[in-house]
Length: 409
Image 1 (tube, helix red, strand yellow):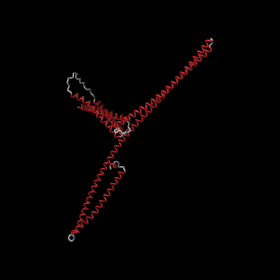
Image 2 (cartoon, rainbow, N blue to C red):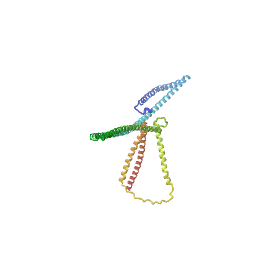
Image 3 (cartoon, one colour):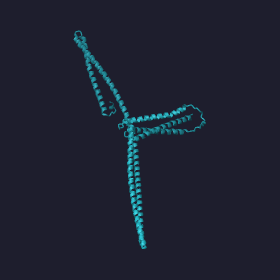
């Protein structure tokens, strides 16, 4: 019945109302039939009783016995009719009570549905805000990635152009040297010299030119080999670094997954349910509260011991001189009070929003551990800020009211 009453628009609710209507109609018909049957029976009883009084003297015992049985049956029928009337009255009272309960349940369902719709609306608004923030962050990240890729491409292109310019410069220098050597060789051939000296010098010049050309070619080949080796080494380093980064990311993800399972998988079946997550978070909160309480007690104990310990020696320090309090205007105190109220309201709103996001993340199984920890830290931080804002508000209000009372005196 509770399932049928949870939503009046369901077919179960309509079938229940139809069944109640049919039951009421049949009960009314049965009561009417018993009333109609009761009247002729009573009339027969009155007639039979009068006849019994008239012919009581001339009847035998068997007839009297039959009549007595008939009278007994009439009394039992009357009692049954009376019980039926009482049952009908009880039924009507119970039907009225059930209808009242049904109306109360309907009102309760409407109130619950309204509050649920309100909560769903607020959650949708938060979801829209988070979606906008995510979209903005993704766009900024995409722009940053494009700019980084463009910067890396420009740097790579500049390095390639620099290497090409260096190779061209070296090639031009080698060509210039070869041209100069060839020119010197031609000049030496055209210059008239003695045979012995000419032959010796020509041979020396030719061998020097060949050596320079060979050295230039060897240098170009060495530069080309060095450039190729450096490119291959850079490629191997990039592949190795990429593979190492991928392996590091995989290890980090696996470590995070194991830590998440160790934290929330209490029965060690490799799956995390909502009940396990809630139980683990509740146990952690309980441990944090106990640690916080223990730390608070530890901090309070030295202060209490210092207060209880009697002073054994008189202090030799001079007593500090009391400075006259600064006069603060009532307007500045009122401004401080209003500002503290605004800060307290803002802190409460942020606290409610952070708590709602943290509770929603705790109930979502797809939430990552990093996001859950970040939301938890944000919730704790907003809680502390709200507490601080509340203390500031109380202090500002107390100072403002005291200044007002003092001004009235």
